[in-house]
Every structure is written in C-alpha cells, then in structure tokens.
Amino acid sequence: MTDGADDPGAGETNLTERINQTNVEQRISSLEAAYDEVPVSEETFELSPEEYADVFAATRGTGYSGNSVVFVTRDGTDFPELSDQIPEQAADDTRDRVLLVLGRGADVWALPGGGKGDEYESVQGTAVRRVNEQTGIRCTVTGVAEVVHSKYYPDTDAQGSVHTLDTYLRAEYRKGALDVDESELVGAAWFAEPPERLTPGAEERFGAFLDSE
Image (tube, rainbow, N blue to C red; front, side):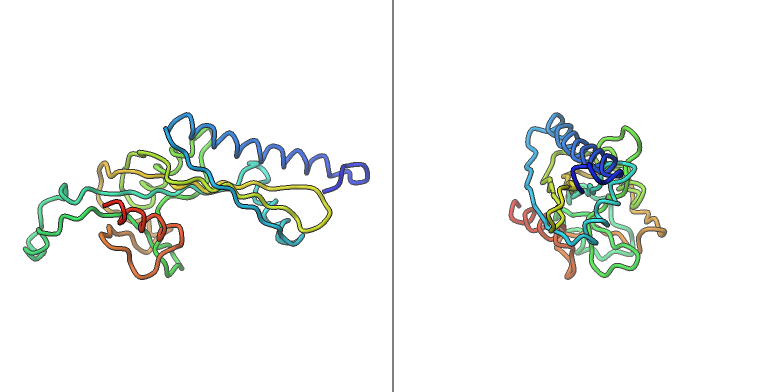
C-alpha cells in the first residue's frame, strides 16, 4: 500500500479501499435515515501483512465486508394453543422468547441473519430475508441495537485501511413456524432463558433483553 509511484497496482488498491470505506459509511447513513437511534461504536485493529491481505481480499468485488444479524423477540402471551402432547403446566409459561440458531459445525447458539445482500438491498432487508430463509420466521425490524464499525490497518509503514460493519438489529416476530434450512443450520429455537453456550454478540443482546424486562 504505497503512494502508487513505484507500485502499478497501488491505484487499484487505493480505489478499492475508498469504495470500501464509502460503502460502509453509506450503510450507516441509510440506517440513520430509517431509525431514530443508531448507536455506532468503532474498533481499530493492527494486523500482520498476511492477516491484512485476507481482510482486504474479503472486500474485493463488493467493496464491503460485514454482517447483519437480528435479535428477534416473540410475545409469550401470543403463542398458539398447546397441543395434546404438551403438559398443561406449560400454559403458565408466558415469558417472551428470543430466536436463536445453531449453525452447521457450530457448538454455540447465535443470532439469525448474516450473509451477503442482494444488489440494492438494504442492511435490514438482507437481515430479514436471511432470517426467513434460515428459520421460516418472518419478522419486523423495530430498531438498531448496535452497529460496530471496525477499521483494520497493516502493522507496517504501508498506508491503507479496510472497514467492516457488523449490525445488530432488533425485531419482533410477525408470523411463521420454525422450518430450519438444513443446508445452513442444525437447529433453531425460541428461548426464554439464554442457553449455556452463546456467541458473544448474542450473549450481550440477550443480557440486555433480560435486564429490560
């Protein structure tokens, strides 16, 4: 990542970086236009040349790398009627639930969503579509819990940066029953209490949810 005088590929590299940063900033702006509050936190990392090359490669083609997941809650007083196989005492459990998924090869529960967006698709549009594809659940985004804007720099004298965006959305259940996409997941469930093993992001969101009740 030089100034371009001696590196014929530097112009392309610098252009990719600018597109990458611009795309991330535009995504933040689109969220701010759609929701009243968009808490944004920033993190900065210095990477080895090899690590930096891997992160940089993830932005090529799209100029963007990131993820958007959804914290979907369901009103516990609005569940369907109990089936004959469910004990009657379960009817008294009207706690709100949170949708979590278990990915193939994973041993920790996570928030649904993620994946690449379609062309011209918003961050929230991608997340809602992916939740439905993964779990069969349709939800409505109600706000933004947090946006983590990460900046990666090489730990050398070279100039350059890569920006990524991890978005945590809040949403409410709208309709649908669990129908797991087995090509991506081995499980999905509604939890009133957090399971033993959670991703850090899901654990933080679940803790805030319990504190607010």
